[in-house]
Image (tube, rainbow over all chains, first blue to last red; front, side, top):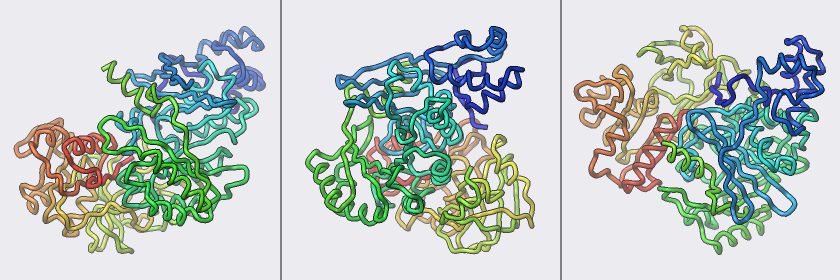
Length: 349
Length: 226
């Protein structure tokens, strides 16, 4: 069994699916419909204790409270950028932290959630990887990052692009998606959720089968030799195989696939890269999201300049690949994933 | 976990192979083997499963590419599903494996091979394939009995085989982690390749250290066990 962190002392109700809640209710001698009642209290209402589940009998609430906690975990720190982006720091055990970003943009509020404490993937450009892998988050801890921020009623979009590789914590990520998209849960459209991966193929296949949320793949270069120096996962799950798998799925109508591409100066921003991208993405209805690189301590990499970035984008669009540049947000509050939690971790140590 | 029909679509098709050997070379560390059916490059990996309906795990090949068998080295993870089962396989039993694949390959250029624990496997494969002449191997472990294949390495590589042990001491073994060993070297060569294999935290720490000491990141290739 994976090792999960949780700060609550008793088992948490928050993070359980309707099936699990119903089973639990029956086991405790309660009516079957109590499961649905609990789900609505947990995921649709502004309460934070079992005592507040007022349509459950007093006895039921007493029994539940003797065995379970509600399970919300409060953030311990929040930083707000001049552009309105907020970064929340949630504690996990052993003084570790996970980060959650809330990014407002006109009529949208996107929450970027973490799926693991730290990461095992060791990408050269990523700060989270420098913390090493500390543990898996439970579905409850993933969903808590949305439910337990002040803006939770206004959240329009969710991206799994925070700390960790979602498909390395597949079971809990799928469970969190179930809670977010079910009628008894947050009832969000899966079309407002994007899960980002570096290309863990077995997890990606299961996700594509079991969820309707959008997929984003961190590509960063179309060339094998370059990618394996940026992303060690390339050795085990080559991009070529990831693309081959994606080509066997139907994207472009309801469900989208996009490719994340951090643009590094002199590394992956040349016409040769444009050509290769066109070649390998031929036949996939997709979008490329170009991302500005914000250097992390000790990195040998640099972000490309604005002119080259625009030119790169234009060249891809001219070749028929829908390409956008992701707006950089929250730069003044360590918006790059992993920076704030690493800083906090070091302060604690 | 993905079902069998999902895997049929993948290029990493699992085929049944017959186990020819299973040796516990150190407590909780096994070397299993089966007949080699394909050519491969030292450093490549295979996926292994007990059942094709369950997602396979990836392992580095731990044998030379002209040997009649493919061997795989693994730690038994008691909480895992696959390795406790694999530890019990006997000759004649069937497991599922893919063709070798992967791009963790060395060439004839000077290089340092840096591994922790069972991350030694791809380097042993390269060594057995005869690619060790201008290489330096640094192996980091917690306990002395985890220096797998040390007799062979010591005999063939001599002073180019460096052992680092963080929890036990012995003569000719550096007392401490690999990062400490590298930190004590005054000048690291910057014009050679570095190959790293092991857990993420070792790879990240060693990579950062090498880069901070002037090694271009382009000269560093890593394989992470996750």
